[in-house]
Image (tube, rainbow, N blue to C red; front, side, top):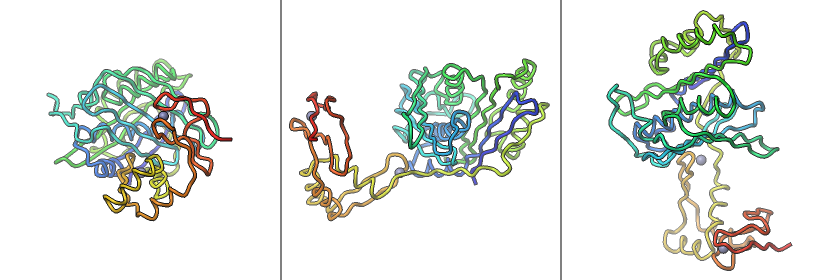
Length: 329
Ligand SMILES: [Zn+2]
Ligand SMILES: [Zn+2]
């Protein structure tokens, strides 16, 4: 079972957040039918989002979303996580794959592409505006990019390790560790940490040698690490999609387009891009959308407003075709 542990050194100078995400990354890779290099990029980003939620969030309903947009064949990767231990995510192209690097590792930096940015959004549901901040990618390897984000956007010094290890094209081990230097950290502790992290090596090697707890103590060797989580926090791949939301998405098609789905296909299949769940929508449900009054752009047919208070576009905004939006009172 995927789980997360948190620890703090006795002097309060260093925080360690660690996760074994093997099961949930295997679940995600299967849901999206991702090739190993694309799957590794997805798994690292999912794990990074779960760890980052413990660095950046305060409330159990807050969410953090990481969007890594590089210039490689992956076409971007996105993950959304919360302190409740749930995460979901997807990649632009799950078939993106590259030959192994000369050191035998998956070429995640190559598939993501080093040119681009990492964008992190914190949303404080159900109140408050989402807050987004982004920095340039360091390498596209994800872990270095998350560390770069923490350093440049948040002024947090950290070491970030993320890894997914495949065996025979199946996820064998996945996990990650964030070691965060707190503001009052002793300079000697930073030197020791750097040496520890170097000696520890790759997180997937650490998790194959021993338990997650042992990995944390290896990384914080000589620093009197106290584990703060009495019980490990369970982690899972979990989406918030539903039959209702899938049907609501069909509202964006015009009534004529919906009618032709019924005539030509006998219904409609929707696929959730976050989790890959396929849903079949019956003709009666599709027709029910026609009974809800709506306002569309007279020029291009884009949905502006639906009764039941769903405003897609605000008064005075530009429609995608350029026309100024006018809504009835
Ligand atoms: Zn979903
Ligand atoms: Zn329009």
